[in-house]
Length: 94
Image 1 (cartoon, rainbow, N blue to C red):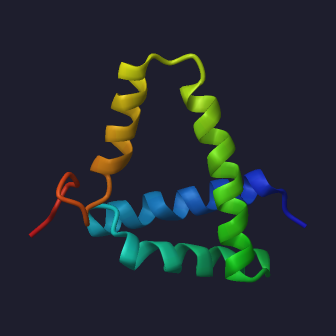
Image 2 (tube, rainbow, N blue to C red):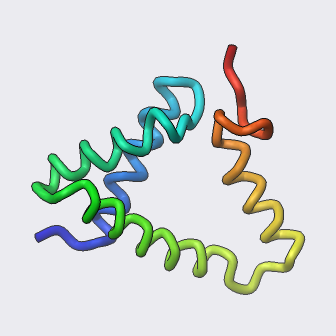
Image 3 (cartoon, rainbow, N blue to C red):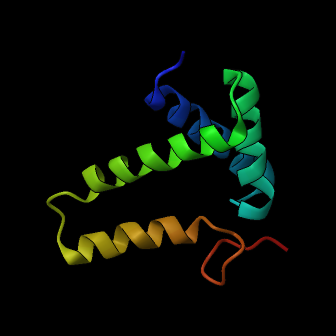
């Protein structure tokens, strides 16, 4: 069985691929697709993949902001939001 970090990294790579292909991150289009493709790749249920991704993501986020100032954390949060092309702050493509 694959480890959780491997599953997380696989999902992240898929999101990066779809962001490039589609000109941005579209949660309604990409999320289900990423979890389903990862589930097929790892021979698991997509809900298990999603649960693992959220678990590892929480740990990664905690490590990423550890020791940062509030201003730096705010900048990190903006970087996350700006990649979501379905929000007013995202990089919208016509």
